[in-house]
Length: 306
Image 1 (cartoon, rainbow, N blue to C red):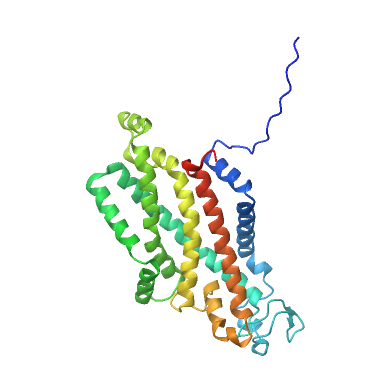
Image 2 (image 1 turned 60 degrees about the vertical axis):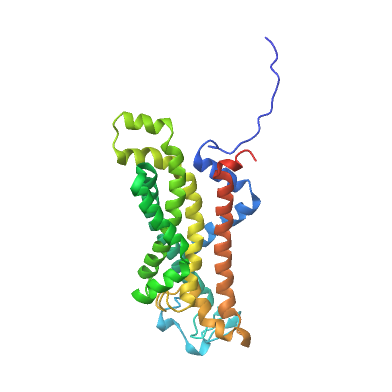
């Protein structure tokens, strides 16, 4: 019996050969991306359980005392409780208002991103698979949408449709779907020429099954990357629209609307009304962008092995 040399096996994270495994490993092995991912998860959890975490329902008129308006951070209220982040001009607790505003911003960003993903992915797959006039028509519309400033298009739509969460979501979907369509089409064109697609066609599989059962799973890498970045873009766009006063109404507050409520008194010493919601928005968008940039590095084949 011969002695076998003892070799050390490097510890590896599980499922590193799958798409989700590569994304997970790439995130946890980068300290910056890991911190950003933890922040994103924490903010999502805070928004999800907001009604149970917020000290006050900032939009319940019975819970608001106008005499507590514009109190600085750590000020006591008329009832003896403490406003950790102060109050705004209506006497609402800023911490509670930010938690509720975070919920609204995340809902708008995620909902518009998912709907735009579904529309853009379907059109990108169809354009790449059928080619010809269908491809030319879809891509000319994509070029037109990408050539227009997204905020300007959203402003025009909301000026026509009016305020409301669903109207903001619709406007953001119309300015975002083209990003998904272009990215998915580029990936699907590569997959279209591979042998497994030719084999599926020769077997007589339906076009729907080929598109969504065979091509789509192999185009998930750019979809994940673009989807992550577009959620951050949607949150920023919604905040901009609400800040300008044509996004969400005051009954459906977001971080952008909270910033707008206090910018006029920013230079008078009442900084907390706008600064704290602005910092929360900055952390949210910055964290999502960092995670998206890391996923782009990991899932892009040009970065494999670096």
